Picture 1 (cartoon, one colour):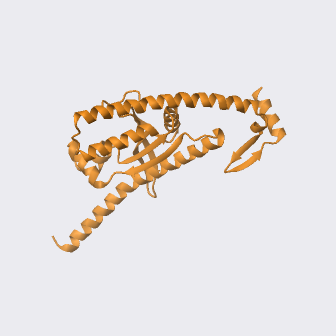
Picture 2: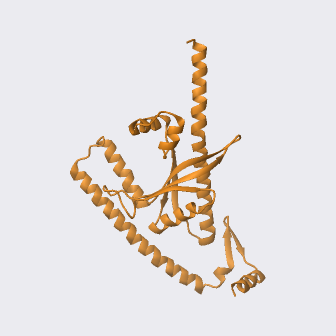
Picture 3: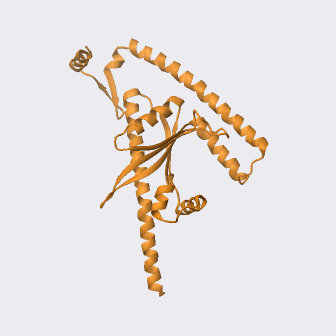
Length: 248
């Protein structure tokens, strides 16, 4: 086998792998745009943003191969598509428990997305205490010559859940997956404490929301103004009258 043929084969392989990974990257871009729109919509309509921050991750080809081998699957691109569902990952961190399910419902309700699977580790935590809502979504990606349906794993959790999961991962990495039983018990206790904190903050959030709603009803003039892109606009009286007539 001559050198020029080997170089050509490497180029073809590189092109194939790049093209394969590219669609997953574009699927993440599409999801991040959707999240950005939801954030702005909530901020404008409700003066509140249920999403604290997001983080996307594209699995490396090396990690994909290792996972494929652990699963004992064929080393082909169709096999990867079929068996590795978390190549593209998006983590959404919310302030409160109710925000998790609100964001999930909004994403799952979008007509161009297909819900493949939902795993609720909040209502049913893992034995180690891990909590999060995992949603597998199929995202359409429009290329120059074709359309592809790409799987994206979305993890939605609170700040407390994310903090616990991050520290748990660091501890396991430090001990090379062999964590002493005593520390495992403490990690589980910490997860229970984080869950209790989430429930308490959810109650406070609900009560503060009710107080805010009452104050809005009392402040008549406040309801006549809207804020869009940091610009404040006053709603004209005829338009307010028209809206009021529409309620009858």
